[in-house]
Length: 102
Image (cartoon, rainbow, N blue to C red; front, side):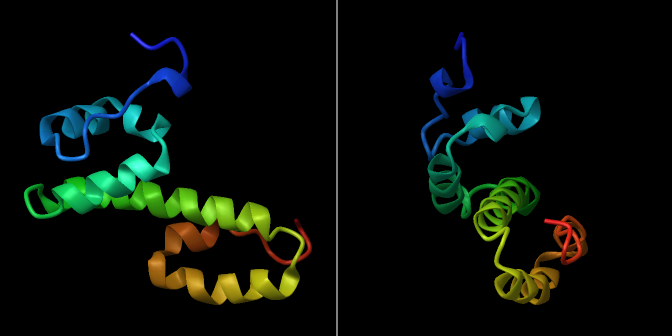
C-alpha cells in the first residue's frame, strides 16, 4: 500500500473496474489530473454517465481552483471568470468570493 499520495498509482486509463473502485473509495481525488483526463477519454464509451460525470466534476473543480489561485489578484480576469463559471453549475460559481475579498 502507498505511504503517501504521491506514491499512489492510478489504475490504467482503460481499467474500468479499477477506476470504479477508486471512485467508490475516493482515492481518485489524489491522482494527477492527467490520469483522470486519460481515464475520461478512454472510458467514456463504456462507462455509465454518472461515473464519468463524477470524474469530470472533480476535474472541473480542480481546474477552476488552479485557475482562480493563479489569477487571484487580477480583478478584471476574476470578473470574466465570474461570468463564465455559471455555465458549469451554480456550485462552482458560489465558491468564487466577491471582488475585494481575495
